[in-house]
Length: 454
Image 1: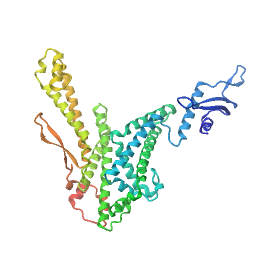
Image 2: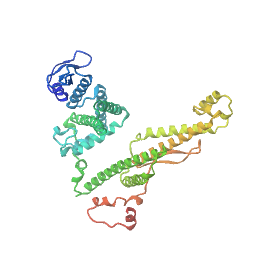
Image 3: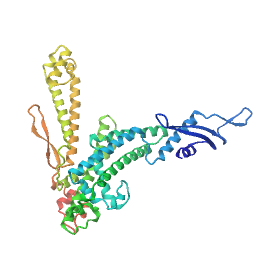
Image 4: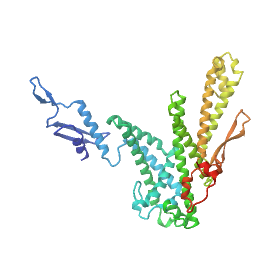
């Protein structure tokens, strides 16, 4: 039925008649069409000035019809067609989330908390519903699914690449503009996320009711919407502060990331030689915004000093140490006077690889400036890696400490330690315009804090 509608809707002919057959006995399903236009059709002008219908379909017309039929079938499917490879990676990602959900529910209280947030009617347990009773549970489930996406084993990046490739194919075939292209990618990502959220709900449905225990006063308070906490008792006040402070940390961290990206784009453009002097006020604004949001984040980290999982930053930290060692080895090779005395470039190359585990030792015999430029670039990259890790650590109330001296080099060894970047006294009044939500009565503000805010 959809094929018939596609032919009618997407054809440019006035009275199209056709016979079609769908062939499914080959490696891929396809269709064959025999068409005739009984209407005015495509006309050609004869020598005597009269017109006559041209009986042959042009290649351009057939190509346009094929594209139209494909796009119509795609648009009218319940789930957008994303090729078999897209479906494969999507299923892999969804299954990873489902397995992770089982493990998480088994090992900690995530399942109990999520179940406490879900309504009794399991028919509402689906992603994307607009029912108010699902708002809290949906937010928690999506946050969990996104954390699963960040795991290297999740196949999410592969699925995302296939979605983008499919969107690119549609853009090329149908001439989509940038907004339509982005919307197509966002739709594919949303469908993938919805599917994974539904797998989490599906995992909860498999738990026997007799095994569920969700009735605790703390869970009841923590599972209701933030706006409905009345603050009549100490537990409610505690829950309100815990959740509101956490949401402020999340918001400040998100806004800090946006500002940081704009600042970095500006600095990269300036480093590449682009003329950016006219936009300096914009750069200064986002530089200030990044620092401001970082201070707000630090303020609420003084209240919520939870330690993240031990392996959260292990990969980034190991990568920093590994790259730092490579820089040290290259710098030591550059400063080694012995390698410059080699008359054979091959011998110098072998010496560099054996002693310093660095390639390029041959250049030290006739063009040491090449190694010097490489060293300078590595130093920039090392600083960027260090800044990136420091930036991430601040979000969790951690710091990258360089106070420990390295005996094997002139620098210091980076160590991760607990610590909040900004002192509470310096940042506690920076969001006075929000503090009214925390106190039912007016409170006095000292001039020092008022000046900091202004």
